[in-house]
Image 1 (cartoon, rainbow, N blue to C red):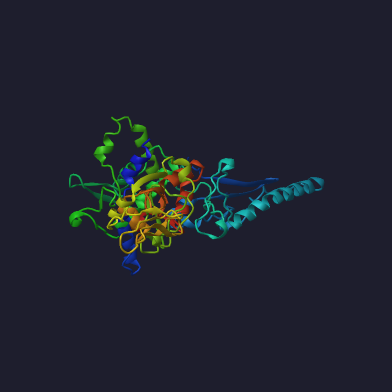
Image 2: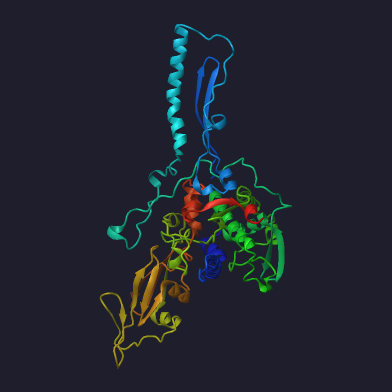
Length: 485
């Protein structure tokens, strides 16, 4: 397994921000603004069987969420009506044309039929009500969502992600592959930044290359499938908009770096077998194959499928890190990250002088320096006294630093993170003499899907559908070819 640092360096460095800002700005243009997953099997619920002479009444409820994807209704989790004959009504096959039993025998047969019907009725009502199962039973080892910082009385516990219908695609096995073949599926032109060459390949092959670069192959299959859908959504959004921004000369659709999406070329993946990575590559290909063609949409358009490495307990609202409010990029609990990622927390020791320099300020005067009871470092000069404090002023909805005061200057948590090269804008500061101990939680900008969170959810039995619906609010699933026609 790639260790966490390698994963971070490969897929979650600060340049990701550029990608997401660009994608968000693309969204803004659309609305007239300037800024901006073990497998789950498909289930078939046998509702009951009634025998009365030669009569047979059967009712079953089938959840076919994959069909919902293909029809653009995946996000509604709407179970199909019970299959009870044409028109959705119960049908009793016509009995043989002969006189049935009479007397006591007829009475007993009638009573048996009524008893069976009483057993069937609750199932029929359930199907009409469109019930969906509860989230997977997490047992005593379940991770309780952390309390949201800054809320009254410690805040209510964070809600669990909404359950999807059993067998919900993209986890359902045995479903038909998406329409189209390698000969007819869209192609993607990838600009290889190191060589300046352009690689042209089918869409699904491109998604495999992105998945190999963006997520460790030893992550759970459901998490890999979620990442595959996010990666596919990203490129389909660009293809649909004929967006070649960021590519030199506009000669390709996308870069192979985190400026857009990290991507391992066909040549590089071709060496995996010689490097003993055949099993890993096969797993990645499976994740792509089982989600073939599926993308996430909101109001009929591919979403800005932002993702990042790990959270500190909550994801972030888009407008609290960028400048644009995007309805499907909302702050949601993500308590799984720290449970599966041993490197989710990091503490750095930095001198106060260095912090000032990185922020473009002159280091504070050192004469008569002292540490106040509040932990702020103050220094006085021979002239006018000046406060040289490191004070966190406010936090965002997701618990990241919103504003911090250094000396007489104020900075956003994002700006402080970027200038100091911190892993996250969710951090705490503890002063120790002339040094500051900065502890960060999570890694990345925090908007959209947490990769480590997705893996933690998968380990607890959540499906790919549930993972994506949790991190992207209100999205539905569609086939890419319908968006690229």
